Image 1 (cartoon, rainbow, N blue to C red):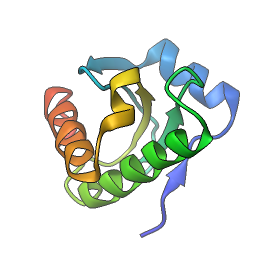
Image 2: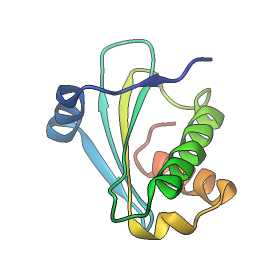
Image 3: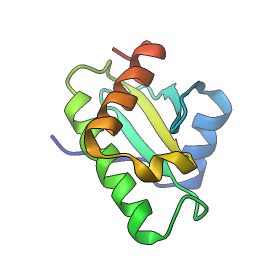
Image 4: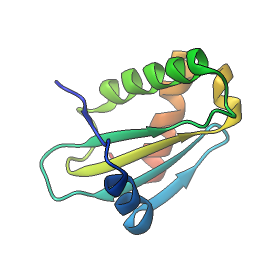
Length: 109
């Protein structure tokens, strides 16, 4: 199944403005209904979290975690993940666990 991404600035702004938020130690998750039959995901990772290698590794882990959860998630949401500083030390299994907890907290299942 392909991964649909949020890329445009106005898409991010819409989710920030009208969406809801759930927070953990490592990531902040914004979500908002998008009126379509698919979920889309976007990432926001500051340079303060780490260099490009670290930031891309975090994105890879959370993309894969999102794909693992995709079939369990409700359809029709735009989701933004904002990585916090401690997320630089996560491995894939911790990222999956963290994303699962946040999705449960936000009632996205």
